[in-house]
Length: 191
Image (cartoon, rainbow, N blue to C red; front, side, top):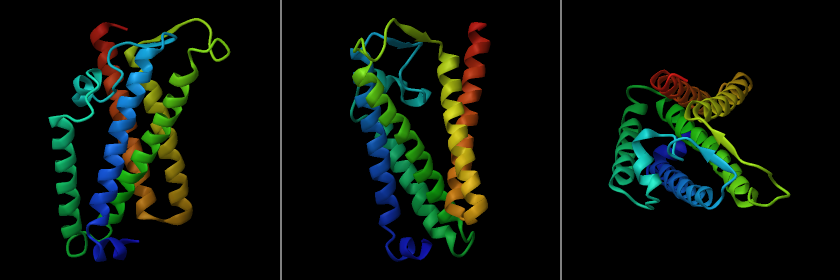
């Protein structure tokens, strides 16, 4: 896999850019659908990442933070492309696995949200109303990401692929981040 990305250095940043734009687009789309329904309520912002909460809450398709993050991550990816062969062989494969696999896990959640928020208003789909506390929403996210991390880790045992290990590591890191944010929020609110 890695030789292809060295021969075509534009592919890795292009793949990342498409995934990043897709993630943001799906986030805004889901946030719009979330606002249209009244069955499910989340405490606080629909967006889990504190850095992008204002942008998502205002349903901005493009923002300075979004563009800055995209440019920064592409710059890091370019640096990894430069360092991989001479300094840290396998770094590119691991990094691509981390960003692609974690984005795929997040995309699965987006697709589930698209479905849920599209049908939840139907009486056949749901009755009543449920409100989730912020710590609970973050814990649910952490559990989802931990499940993806475990799946990727199990795949790594069978494949010994640095790409898959990157995915397991990134999902594990994101799960830890969401667990930490949940504990911090619970400690602040006394929940």
